[in-house]
Image: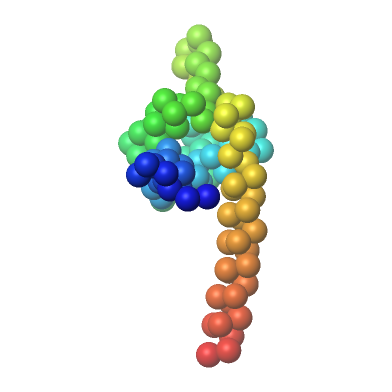
Length: 112
């Protein structure tokens, strides 16, 4: 697939899921709904501020659904939208490539 009229589908994809955390957040949500603290615990390197920002952007782009329950303290859950689920096959391909890359790197280290 080529770029047409200065519009590149890869650039369009990266404009939505680009950055260090968005795909990782989406990957964490593949197996079901998570609360904010569950997401943060699964990604200890991310700050609360960055997680909040990335979740808002993913929600604005329609990839995740934020559900707020009217209770005290507030309960907020995040899940993949149907549109977000359409990205699952891409993430599965990325995971397959990542496993292959990790194995190659491990073999390279052993041969040194």
